[in-house]
Amino acid sequence: MGNNVVGLAAKNGHLKKALEVLFKAKVDFKVIKELLLSEDLLGHSVVGLAAKNGHLKKALEALFEAKVDFEDIKAFLFAKNTNDKNLLHYAAEWGRLGKALEALFEAKVDFEDIKKLLFAKNTSGEPPIYYAAGKGGWVKALEVLFKANVGIKDIKEILLAKDSAGDTLLHSCVADQTLLGVVEVLFKAKIDIKDIKELLLAKGEFGNAVMHQVISNNGSEKIMEILIKAKIDIKDIMDLLLVENEKGFTPLHFAATKTDFDKLVNDLVAAGASPVKLKRVLLSKNSDNEEYQARINKLFENLMTEDEFIVVVPEPEPEKKTFFQKAFKFFGYK
Image (cartoon, rainbow, N blue to C red; front, side, top):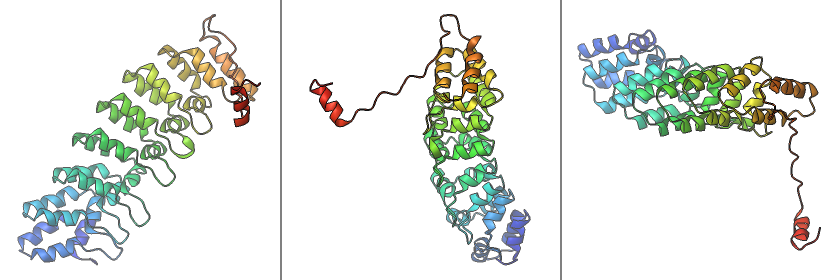
């Protein structure tokens, strides 16, 4: 594209106006199409620049008003740059994934084609979905998908997509501080708690579930607030807090290192959680840490009734027997 009028217009947010001028001047569409599918000296595509600047919708309006064949419009939308970045890479990179998706849905682009764009990898092996996670774009993008009546099966396929380290898109959203916003959108869309649990219990690197990372990133108070506000049953909340990673640690153990831990425990007990079970889980780890054990015991002094107040000793692991030991026992030998 060099510095042609279409490329400059896309870069500066005036692509629609440039197209209108070209169509009004009755420039052969083959020439316009060639310009639309070209790249600038840095390898940027016209559609990528339009999406980056948030003007994709206006560009599409100009094409539809000129009655351009839909297949030619799709060719424009699916154009890639020299690094295989498509329009959604550009949009996501600049925090405008939701806006680009909105434009695609309004243009009646089939969702299967949109999915191909979402999962298409650039030359570095990165799909647009992870660009968006790094720019806080999934809250808006998720709202757009639900508004377009995209089903939960497809939503889960996107949110549970894993990166090279084995973490899901939701793990990336935690790192980007947007996971709680994503969860709020899921509840607002009235997604079944079973599906939300599946998403939050999804495991990544080192067997850490999304919930482990939420708690690790100081999100215990906010996630509890969201769950309680959504009137989630305490059993489901406990399932989320007691999922174990590869070393047997739960999000509850992670929470024990945070300043708001006492409040979390009090909120759980107030919501109906068993203080006995909570205490047993918490004391099952860090048995050699006397300060930790004493702190947990003290915390539960005022939360347990006289009948419940017991010293919880972690149950010993069952003795592992060899094949021959098992065989001897079977035949009546000790």
